[in-house]
Length: 143
Image 1: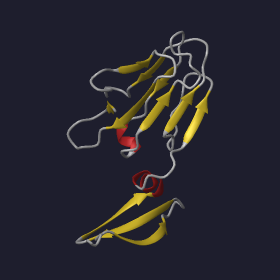
Image 2: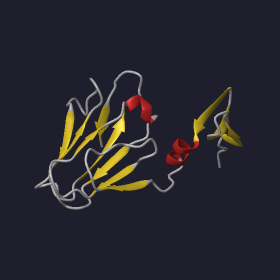
Image 3: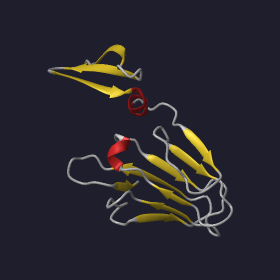
Image 4: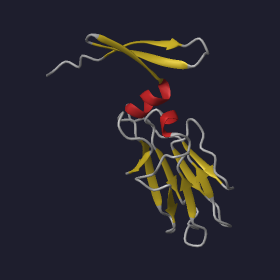
């Protein structure tokens, strides 16, 4: 059986009071916010229900369940760089997208798989968007 060379050392608090965790690997130390670590370890994802538009994406949002039955709901995405690799899932949880399509728009000049926006237009449809953080591309990709 192999030995995992990544070692959990300690939980730290940054000067602003936010929690983080320090991990040590051979020859390098790195630190990551706890919400990113929870994502890496496969913990339960944070869900939130919305009932009005425009839909504002919160810093810790991971799954947004949309229950909007009137109008044409919109959701402007934050800059992909601000998400630190954390994906976002949007779900037409109310089953209203055929009559009330949900438009998700990229930030500034960023794109979603090359397009400025993505539309949920099938009842109960969902999409997961992942911020591109590979150092070459920018914006969001659809999974």
